[in-house]
Image 1 (cartoon, rainbow, N blue to C red):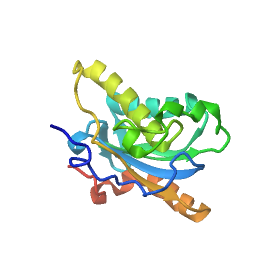
Image 2 (cartoon, one colour):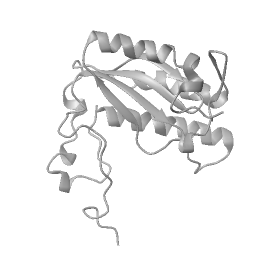
Image 3 (cartoon, one colour):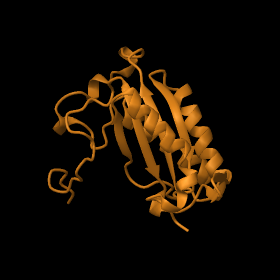
Length: 182
């Protein structure tokens, strides 16, 4: 029998940090088994296939449905995406509150993601991409993404500029990339 206190996975999020608070975040989301699902790199250019185009479209659409989100630099690579997500303070209010889900962690659902949080944004993006790709592939229960995602809080303008450069130059460094698959 599953006991969430005994069989839990350790979170990679910064303990105690409020991921609904305004700020910029550098995120990386990898495909399942790091499969080159989205296309290939030719020279220093990413050539996206139909699945890569879906990932790019859904990233752009995600912000349209979430007034608390602004998107910055973004790239779809063959087996991952990198992007900067900015959570603004403008949308703080009733639409970001889920009163029945607040309370001590032991009383929250297992996969609790506060409305307006980075985790909620990423979950919505991953779900939309997965649904569309699985329709295209004819695999209704197929996996597209690895569990979880990597994030780093961007703390100042210099770090934001370095992160943008990293994202924009990612295809040119593909053979040296941690996620490279020949």
